Structures are given as structure tokens and as C-alpha cells.
Image (spheres, rainbow, N blue to C red):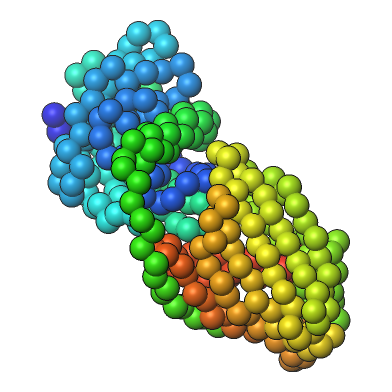
Length: 325
């Protein structure tokens, strides 16, 4: 049913923007949108349910989902996917229908970006109100999405468990040995003296302020001795049980000037990469320039897909924040 807003009564709500970091690959988070089976388990706020859904996961494909409210009333989300680009983003165009009439329209765009060892899913929704009585529904959308994302966390864990069971039931196959190489250079300028920047890289207390996994990550091991011949280790566990270990050896340390080190990264006890990194510190007008150059060897089928460079950039930004605090 086509419904046109009455310009004398309609108001345009502010867009909703919300995001959450999930300790899971982008492909798994993206998959939670791909079928009625998945969406029926999580695509509703706390207290609501999804008894019916029809999903055709392609650009132009149907998105039709019944959301049952706690009082038993049904609101239908009816529309289609406008864009799907796995695993980067998807977009939806929907009408919310109650009692046979469209009450408001929702344009939804969802992006999936690499962050730390997980995926940042960000949702933006723009609304057009047809029935002014439903303006309040958009005002409560942020809280509704918060509890919806709680359900999504559970569904992602279910997808992980299913993948683990599938892998355990599959016959064991020999590991195919391979190495893929990658390199990058990143720069940041900080409003701080070179000595303070060097301290943030070499002092255990100062580095602990910015060097960790982020939200959902618990440090279980930390040791640091920044000198030529010194070692550094940082091990931790994500909320879903995934473990990581950074194990570094310093070859060259020149105070306030440079650090050169090699490090291994382990994921769930498996060595996934060996890298050589150089950090150069230089005084510039207005502060200090930090240049990070890294050359990595990614081992035995591990697909970095740019996550190391992206994660390093986020850590450099966190150094800047720690220097301002």
C-alpha cells in the first residue's frame, strides 16, 4: 500500500546511528543477516519475537518480517534489500506496517569493518513518518537496537558453535603450508615531545594505556622489557574464548629515535604471522611524527585481508588519545 505523509503533521526524526564490536570475523557477523532462520532469533528488541519471516538475500530481494510486540500486536517490516556487498555492507528499504497501513519508512545501512581482532558493525537508519502517532517509536529506537544487538551477540555465538561442530565432524586434512607477504607504512603527528612519544612505546605503564585488544578483551599475560635484546609479550582472551598472543623481540632501541623489533602473532595457540616492525620518532613543527613500517609473513592460509594495517592504525590513534589524557 502506498502511503503519502501529510506535510502538515509529519516530522522528520533524527537519524539513528549505533554500533557494536563483536569478537568474530566479518563473514560471521554478516551471515547473521542472510536468512530468515538467523533473523528470527535476533532481529527484535527484548520482549519481542519474530514468528514469521521471508528473506531473499540479494540486492532487490524480499525482506518481510513480522515483529510481535509483548502485548501480542504484530508490526510487519516489509521491503527489500537495496545493496549487498559481502562482507562490507548491506542496505535495506522498509515500511513498518500495522493494522494494514504503513506507519513509517526506514532506510537502513549496515557496515562491517575490521577492528582489533573483531568486527565493528555500524547501523544507520533514516526515517520518514506517515502516522504521527508512531513518532515515539523512532525515539525509542536506540534502546530497542541495544537489546536487539544483545540478541545478535547470542546468534553470532551460535554461528561460531555451528562452524566449530562442522569442522570437528569433518575429516582431518593435512595443513597446507604457505606464506603470503604484506607491508605497510603509517604515520601520525602528535602534539607531544619526542620523549613522551618514546615513553608511550617503551614504558610498561604508559604502553598499557593503549596497547590491548579493546572492548571485550581481557589481558591474561603482560611482560615488557624494551631494550636491545629485550622481550615483550601480551596475551589475552576475548569474551567468546578466542585467545591471542603478541610475542616480540627488540633488535634495536635508540631512545627518542627508533625501535626495531620482530614479533609473532598467535591466534588460539596457532602461529598466524611473523613480522618485522620499525618505529621512527622525529621532532616536527608542532610536535612529533611517528612512522611505523611493518613487513609481515602470514602463514599457512591465514588471510589477513588488511586487518593488521587497520588494527595498527587504530592503535596509533589510541597512542594520541593517551598522550592527551
